[in-house]
Length: 120
Image (cartoon, rainbow, N blue to C red; front, top):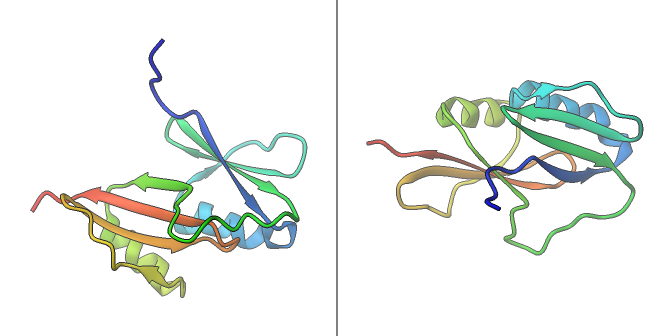
């Protein structure tokens, strides 16, 4: 058995932030909102993988510095600008050799990483 890919990732969000979370993942990140399953889940497609956001009142505060989800993207500077224009503060103080990189917290407080190979 070989693991070929990650099928899905689940992240929590408070139910009151459903609209903000949908805007962040759908509009700002450009993920496709998929048909929604029964229950309090927002499901997005990231190519062949899924990002499921599950409504919960439970706190999902990860340990400081941990990142539950990392996206490899094309067009990182454009995404950076879009997030800054939408007033999302970025963490850009942790270089990764060979990559352009930044971190951002989604509206629910989940810390996300975005990387793109640095071809320069």
